[in-house]
Image 1 (cartoon, rainbow, N blue to C red):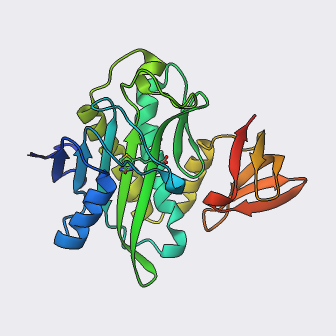
Image 2 (cartoon, rainbow, N blue to C red; image 1 turned 180 degrees about the vertical axis):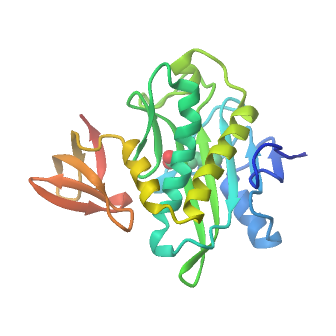
Length: 255
Ligand code: BTN
């Protein structure tokens, strides 16, 4: 079935609905390689048998309960060295949309690099797979999972909008709103508003400036997040020294 979202400008003008699939990212990546679909093409599903998360993790989601989709963006104006800005734009889009749904309960924020957190629990995640041409990003498959209506999780650190607010959310309505919010930040990226994007990212960044526990290759330590560097690596102050970390190099252990 194909559907078109009317309100967004360029995202969701072609949508492929699948009752189930391995991973919407894999489905869209295959489409990109075979058919070169238009920017904004979406693969949406009710259930994934092999949902992919960051760091090689599996993304579990109960059938028909949550938002699971991938969207094709063609940010050919973003240099590979600045690809973190695409994470920023996407993450901010999800936070903007989420904040309308949970604001009364608690404000959402972004746990580096782009996990969506509400009240110290994860409510959504983003997995971006870039196709690169020379030094520019040619196409990005942006996979987004948002826990909307699931009532319980094996992982005690996971939550859903329904668990936070007590209300059910219509996933297609949420998706249409989310696409508009993502477009808002993609336009900032296209118009080279990097400083503004980063300021907004910092204003939503989980644990920025707070003492918390982390683990790196040397061991566990108490540190303070100070921001991200130009390559999107996390900067943590450790024993008075700023250390930078890529995604697999550091783990958050809690307060
Ligand atoms: C994370 O680990 O936080 C990223 C999770 C991303 C999950 C979404 S669900 C839709 C899309 N398809 C996938 O296989 N993964 C992403």
